[in-house]
Every structure is written in structure tokens, then in C-alpha cells.
Amino acid sequence: MKLSSSLGLLSFAGTTLSAAISVREDNPVPPNFCCFHLRDVLSGQNVRQNSQTGELFLNDPSLPQGWYCINQNSDSKVLYDRDNNACIQASPGNEFQCLDGTPGGDTWEVASDGQGPYLKDYGSAVFSICNVGGRQQVFGPSPPGGLSCQMTILRVQDRAGQCK
Image 1: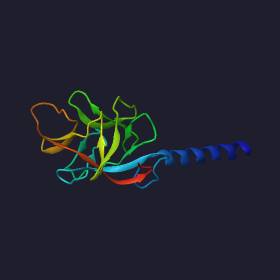
Image 2 (image 1 turned 120 degrees about the vertical axis):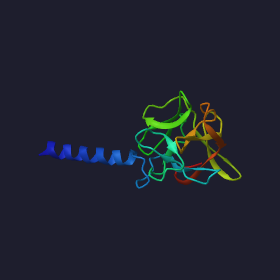
Image 3 (image 1 turned 180 degrees about the vertical axis):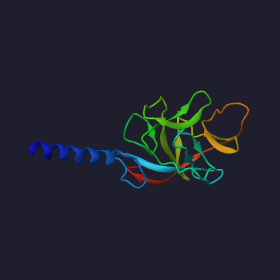
Image 4 (image 1 turned 135 degrees about the vertical axis):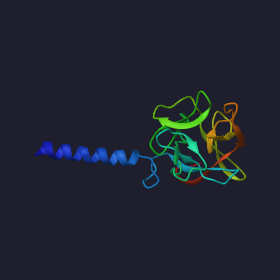
């Protein structure tokens, strides 16, 4: 009887821990994390994310809005999406992508100016919005050649948790 109770308690604790770690809009933000949506300053549109490819887009209403989290009190500088995938500027092509739980070498941070908080990576606040097959995809500051792109800044919106 004691073993059964212990296993039930462990199962409950594991479920509770999993829920606390999960980074979803409808769940509490993980301890020490700041979570938010991203908005393109040029179009005013929120960034959306394809959960299968991890790629970020602006003009695809079939995709959910992205929800991103960073521990601003940590030196790791890792940005996570709602599925706990680490975000990177992927090579080749410099795509802004969140697909794998393994952090890359990116140095994400939320900075602020007189107009509010914005996202930076590798010390740069510049991102590119490029037309790829009729969709507006988000890239880093040096997108692949041959694409029609505009430079932009991604503003941090709807912050929740421990944000500086």
C-alpha cells in the first residue's frame, strides 16, 4: 500500500513539475522567466510560428502566435518557444527558428528604449522580414541573397513573469 501511494505521489509531483516547466500562454510562466509575444514594428503584426518547422512568419493566420521566454537572470541567454525549443538563427540562411531543445550559441536578450522592450540577438536588434513563397518569414540581419526583404525590429509585447 505504501509503494502504491509513493508511486502515485511521484506521478502527481512529476505532472505538477511538467506543468510548471511548460511554457504556454494558458499556464503559469516558469520561475525566473520572462515570457512574451513578438511584434514586427513595420507591419504591426505579431510573429507566428510553425510548430512543425520552428520557422517564424508574420502573415499566416493559420499559425498560432509565438510565445517566447527567456531567463533574464541567467547568463545562458537562451530564448525558448512555447514548446521549450531553443531559438536560433539557423545556418545556412540565417532563419529565426525554434525547433530543438538544445541551445545554440545565440545570445538573446530583451533590451529597452524609449518606445519599449525589443529583442536582440548577438547584440543586434535588426531582423529581416523576407518574402518566401508568398509568406513573410523572419530571418536574422543577414538573410540569404535573392529574397525581397525589409529590415525590422521585433518588439516584445504582452510580457508575463519576471521581466526587467
